[in-house]
Length: 64
Image 1 (cartoon, one colour):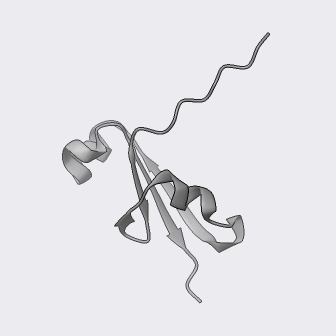
Image 2 (image 1 turned 180 degrees about the horizontal axis):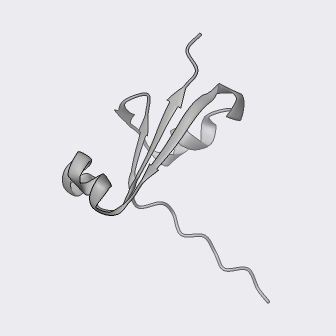
């Protein structure tokens, strides 16, 4: 069976409180990540409005 190509994430990506492009998320080292929060549905929409309608991935990095 052939692998299904992955679709790019169409939701909102937030790193340390700032909206970012997926390239920023891809460039983070796993060791620098403190927490990852995934929101979807009404929870994401209620917090982020129309920008969160496709879900939100919120990353907090470790502080130096």
